[in-house]
Amino acid sequence: MRHNPRHYRTATGVVVVGLVAAVVPLTATPVSAHRKDYGQKWSNFSYHHVTGYNDEWEQPMTKAPQRWSEHGRVALHKASGANCNVKAGRYSSSSYGHYYSYHVNGGSTGCYITLNARTITAEAGRFQNFVHSVFTHELGHALSLGHNERDDSIMCRCRNRNTMTRRQAHDNSDVTDYYTTGYTRKF
Image (cartoon, rainbow, N blue to C red; front, side, top):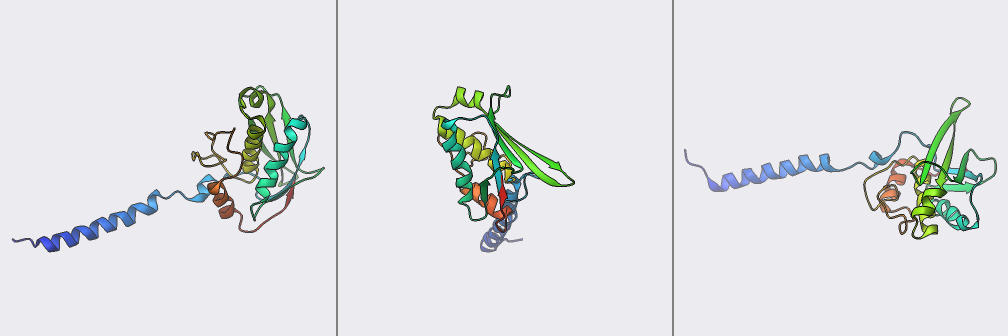
């Protein structure tokens, strides 16, 4: 049997295109993969700084929620009596910060965000940037964003906390994907 080389090349081209079309959807990472199943479930909330920080912490602690609020679907407000409390203190943990959510009264959700002054002070090259980065990251958890391995994301544990202080394009995409409209919430 004789093979037609032209027919063979055409058939190969079709197979290659078919494989590429089948592989591309499998390699794309969905934005929702970085969303946590817990968090505040709303993008507009208020927070209350409980205790534990001095004037040196004020600027980065103010900037982080302001910068998240620059996203069209997020609004974070400082308010007394809010159900999300932020505290800086010296903790034995090796982490820089931590986000905790809790449920009360049959479904009402609140949160605590702690910033570890002990580890931050020991490791910060640029103190205010470092605090800003850690608080921005923990607020990301309050917005239901999970950790990821992208070094171009505020939600990456591997980011440089001395230089990356703001949400990045990838973080914006995650928030836009998760929150279809803006909501308001007080800390």
